[in-house]
Length: 393
Image (cartoon, rainbow, N blue to C red):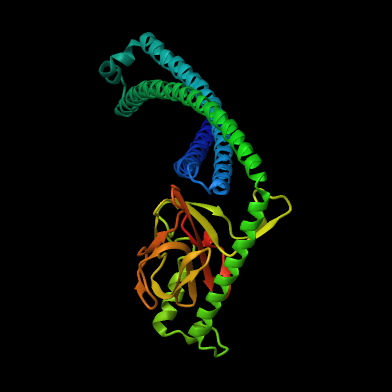
């Protein structure tokens, strides 16, 4: 009973570690995909004239993703070692069981040879003095033969189990060695990226005046855009003092509810891209003591990237704002999505748009290979964090 309990505990531990390993492997793959996306975009931003700040943000995100990757690799290595240790214990137990089974089987064979009547089953049964005794002897012979067969099967099964577990152990050693080699490469890449970030920081810190001017300009653009959104809300609500939602038709209310239900599931406004400016108030990535307040998120993508609606709705307004090029405001019931810094717009006021429908192209400086846009989500006049609404990549 004690051996059985130990066996069950070992099996449960192995199952638990196996599940943990799978989860860690999935996290490792997610981190690798995030790094690959960053790499692809970095090749574009590094060649751009005005994308140094975006490059810094992307490199910083890449460093964070690689640090998470290395952390997960360390956890995987621990899981591998635990798996190896438990397999060794399991192999030792199976080997011990095999020795016991072989010893028991050897005793059975020895007793059979000593008592030849057991091998001459028919004569053994006929030697009975009565029918009742003959029945008992026949039952005994049957039980003996069954037991011997079972013991033989157990020996074969335990041998196969040992072969399988030893094969698993070898595989674990190989995978662990490969993972350690992979980790070594990732640590080297991390050091290179950290050096690259330091160089970018030093370069940008020399442009403090230009960065401060850019922050001030962005604040002016943000205020103008906020005013345009307020105008849209006021026009839709007909300045009645009621909320926009109260003025919606039954169909528009359904759109509002559908939009709300899709929080965390909305497609990205660009097919490819990385968030390089985060929502809300936060420290400037270069200037110490300076905080920036973002009404939405900045998304950096490739040159001539197509911008698309994240949900079905109606174009409330297409507006041109100095410094932000064209902005498109789309109404989804009492929700608004805003797409700024577009060079080309393919929709007009009042147009109905469907999910993922093209509405324009991101503006990029001449000669640049990357482009950035601003994306916002509003629930009437309450700004939302778009990152919480968009689907995870």
